[in-house]
Image (cartoon, rainbow, N blue to C red):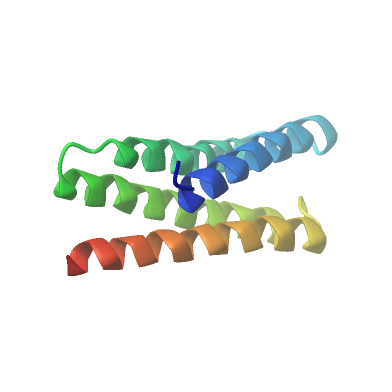
Length: 116
């Protein structure tokens, strides 16, 4: 079976987001920003999974486009949590590096899909 890098990485990111959400709620007593991150960060993988079984090429591009928007939104929430001192620089850098890697992969997939 062929490896699906974006599927694996987006799922791994979702797991990290859930754990970060739990940490922010329990340790930092932060509920609003972290909930936004939870929604966008877990949505990325869900959209990738939907795209995996798209009915048409246009449907695939649409779902991957939504995944791209969701990971970009996740980066925004991570930046905001960092700048408001809910995340340390190390926590931010680690999560942000994963998010940036995912957005690069999705962008490359979308460029390839548009070229074909």
